[in-house]
Amino acid sequence: MRSLFIFDPKDLYSPILGGVQLCSQEFLDIVGAASEELELVPVSVTDAPIWRLRRLFGLGSYLFYRPKDVREVLVKAAASIDPTHIFLNRSELIRIAPLVAELAPHAKIVVMSHGNQSGDDLYEVAGPGGARKSKIGRIKAMWQLGLDLANESRYRHRYLDAVCVMSEEEEILERWLGATTTVVLPRIIKVNPLTWEPIFGRIGFVGTLNHTPNRIALERLCDHLSTFDASNLEFRLVGGPDDVGRALATKYSFVVYLGKLNDEMLQREAASWTLFLNPIFWLSRGASMKLGQSLSWAIPALTTRAGARGYQLTSDQSFITGDSVEAFTATLLDVVHSSDQLSKVRNRLLRSAEDWPNVQFLASRLKSILD
Image 1 (tube, rainbow, N blue to C red):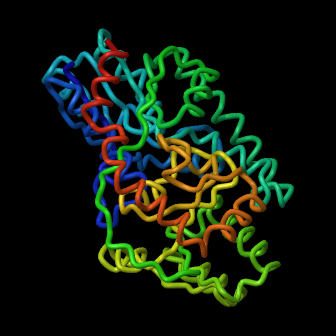
Image 2 (image 1 turned 180 degrees about the horizontal axis):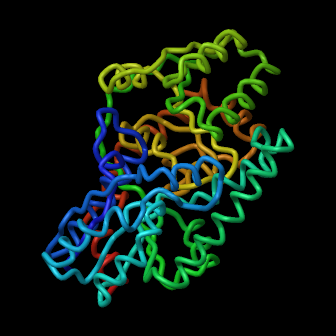
Image 3 (image 1 turned 135 degrees about the horizontal axis):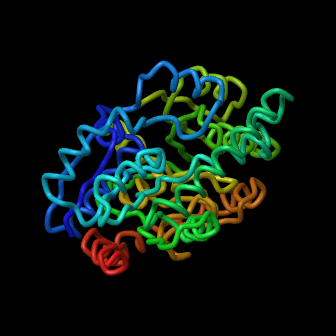
C-alpha cells in the first residue's frame, strides 16, 4: 500500500494529549505498519467567513474543511507517491472526499472514524440533560441531527470505500449509514503497570468534566451514591474545568476535586485508587480513552458495557456492569472494599499483555480487508 494520511495537526500533536490525539496516533501507527510508503498530509479547519457563519447558525453539516483550501497540498501529495489508499483521520474530513476522489481516482478512500457527529447529536435531542431541555435547543438539535445523518450517509454511499471503527457497535451503525466495507480496529493497550497501593474506599475518575456524557454521568452517579452511606468512600475527580469539579465537591461530601494533573502526578494519584471509574450510561461516539489508561496501568476498573466499547475485554479483566446508574453503583459498593475481588482483577491484568491486539496484528487486518 502507498498511503496518504490526511489529518489536522491539532488532532495528532498537542501539548496535552487527549482522547483524540491518542486515537489518532494509534490509527497512524496501524496505517504506517500496513503501508510500504506513507506520506502525512496536514490540513486545517477553514477560516472562510461564509463557512464560519454557516457553522455558527447550523446552515449545513460537517463544515470544517473546505476542499478549495486544501486542494494545493493534496495535489502535491497525490503526485508525490501516486497513492493506492487515502486515509482521512476522523469523520470530520469527509467533505474533502470528492476532491480526493478527483485527484486520485484509482485510490481507495478510507475514513478512520473516531465516531460520527450524529452519535453526539442524538443524545442532545433525546438524552437526559441534552439540548431538549429548552424548546429552541431541542429544535436546533433535531435540525442538526438530520443534517449530519444525511451527510454521513451521502458520503458513505458516494465517495468512501471503507470506514475503520473502534467497536462492533459502530460497525453496525456504519453499515446502516451505507459503508460498503468496515474494519474494526479496537484500542491498543500498551502495558505499563503502576505500583498499585490502593487506599480502600478511594475511587477515582479522570476526564473532561463538562463533556455532556461525563457531566451527566457524574451527576447521576453522585446523586445515587448520596442515597447510601458514603462515609467510607472518597471519590477523587481529576480534570477540568475547575468550576464543574468544585461544584461537585461542594455539593457532595464524599467528592474531592484535584483539578488537572500532569502525567506524573496523575500516575501517582491513580496508583492509590481502589477502583478506576468509567461511568458511561449510553452509547456515544468513539471509545472511552480513560478506560484504556486504567488497563495499561493494571488498575482495576469499573465500567459499563457502553463504556467498554472499543476494547477486547473479558469479565475477569475488569468489572463490567449494565448501562444504568443503579447497576453501576451496586457493583461499586460490592467490590470497593473487597480485596479478594480487586486483587483477582489486578493479577489478571498483569498477565494480559498477550491478550491485547497490537499494531502489527491490526495492520495485518486492515491490509487484508482493504486489499
